[in-house]
Length: 248
Length: 278
Image: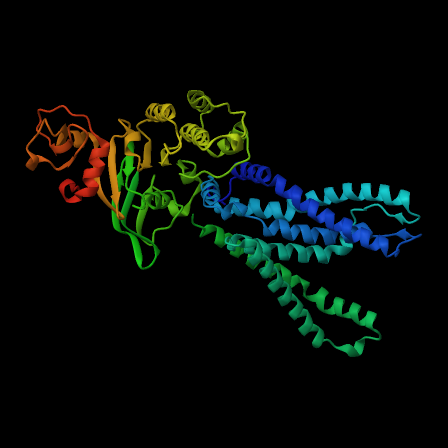
């Protein structure tokens, strides 16, 4: 790559600038994610599901779930500067290549924000456990950072990020509504694919519903999840091209 | 430095803004791009800076195609738009974050420009008035060391002393390898600053002359001094004596009245007809 495409010095400056300009947005969105986690815990607390018991993996599961929610909001509100003419001019006139601008945005949404949320969630889990383990007879296990079992979920998360990033760069007028509709459309398409897969699923191998679900998961979802990679690449490419053709 | 050939541009197909526009501008000039509201000044500037793409034709700036928006091109061009983005940064933080993109950024010049305007760089941009924000961005732009500086209505929002500071700073930062393009409809604010006048009207460049040529070709006189109205290319009645533009007599020492010239060109373009680049 030549200097006009990617320069480490420029990319570093751009990442610094992007981080600085998005710090508040990161904080607010992480708060929404943690707010959702609190709501989830309160609901389960009232259901007495974990009363007088060891509570395993709650935080790992809840982390992935709240990362999905807050991450989608964060990515959906990317390229926020394009929503004003002045912001668009300012962004496009930054002396950095299209590849650098694209890379810094992808870094922010798919690496920096999840890491930031991971740390926020860890801090949150320490506080929550401190409170819950003192006031209840249940014992909430600490957040273990072992999120490997949710690897597939995280992979799908990164795939959906690219689709939302595309929506964020494409929809500038009434973006919130359009991005929500876009997210619903994507969810509907995924649901439809799963529904068709379920209809065509060979039921004869399953003995009961739980076994069938597991079988479906392993044979359809697990075997086909790699498709998220090419689709993610295609949407990333579309984001890159959209950025390139952007005018003020 | 700027070369525009057969440029055509429109926002909507039925309403063409520029049709086969040609323009050549060299370095070492401070060019005043004048035009009424809606004449196409901002659109032309956006095309020159790569923010809008021409539909047809060729545009070259500093030997590069602006629409490619290469980092080398962008680090050599500074554009201050008329409306400024709302920012929540402290001015010194803004400089720390944006200056690294401009390899020739001169921190001393920036500090000196800020002192001239009387602004404290430790203040937050959101606490400044529109005029003060403009002063900051002008100070920053002049310190970038860019070869091409484009200011769109830079004096909007500036008070009278600041307009004077603006003129002084622009004049003092000018070097032979730079081109400063100032677009405005407030012709009077440019005073003696510019050395070339470019007038855009209805999407066409109807006048492009250096101030030297203007001085050689026209005299700006009171109607009393040249009472023969057949000689007037354009005149305006005023309180007391009127003002007129007449072909140069060679014996009159007159200062260019930009406002009168602009009004004359817009009212009677045929009388001031000019080639693309004289």
